[in-house]
Image (cartoon, rainbow, N blue to C red):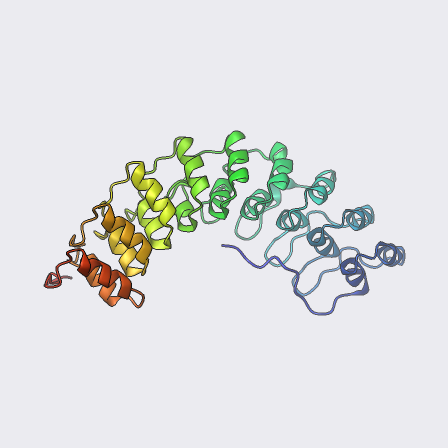
Length: 314
């Protein structure tokens, strides 16, 4: 789960306004007047949070020298280090991490996400590279069970995925839905080059999550034909059912992914395969609000229009 990291807020105290204006002289003036360097706004953000998001190293240095709390947490427990990672500013991160008061092991938000999770999700490769020497484990999971590699894979940043793998991130780490980075989680957002990278590193392109979904199911649902073609070329079972009996063609037809359905049909997918309740891809195309083109495709390729749903289903 991700949340808006933008600092959208009501009128701020003069010190914070000066920070947003990037006016270092005014910031220094207010600090000289003993303005509260750790004053909290309505969402418990400090002036240092604002400066970290803006990425102004000079103002950050002024605030830290004046006693700004580098471990301050806002209402969702985001720290200035999280903000720096979100703004993809490694120089700000370096400045924060040089503080002797920083407790990097405690820098987790309410979702248990560290700055590395945030950097990975925001494609901030240089920030991640800055953090890695100071982190005890690359495989620390957030509240949903996802490690930094999950977030990097989902973002589609090949450079970030390479960095994490080269530093020892585990390909076998699963999230709480038992999805590895190389399976559903990655392919729902379907970045082909990242898929190729993970497969080349030994990820199992045929593995399933606890509901039986394979990478092919996920790619079909998200409509990414390039990933579907790649998986089929590399041995994915075209009619493999999930726990509900649905094949990739069922999924494509229900979600209205006509280009994917066309690719699957052309490669020999069974247009009449029933799922656990007797529904064929044709049935699912018929009930889908976006299934008209898939319906026509199936009928033109031998789908049995008289096939009925099984009776006496629970």
